[in-house]
Image (cartoon, rainbow, N blue to C red; front, side, top):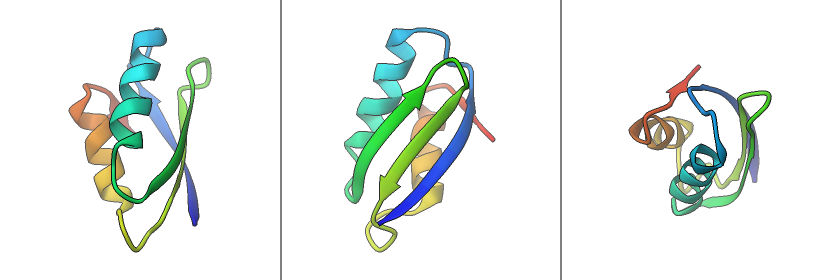
Length: 68
């Protein structure tokens, strides 16, 4: 398993957290997703053979948030 922490801008409420956790969590190969709303960070544990970091970033971007 790989672990990555992404800086995400634009999250401001519980709905934002749920949107990111649900969309990323549904990706094949993602083991866990933890959003820290106050810090604007998303921790993802994933299988790099099944899903790429770019796909994870794209999924967050598709929810309307900016990934740095």
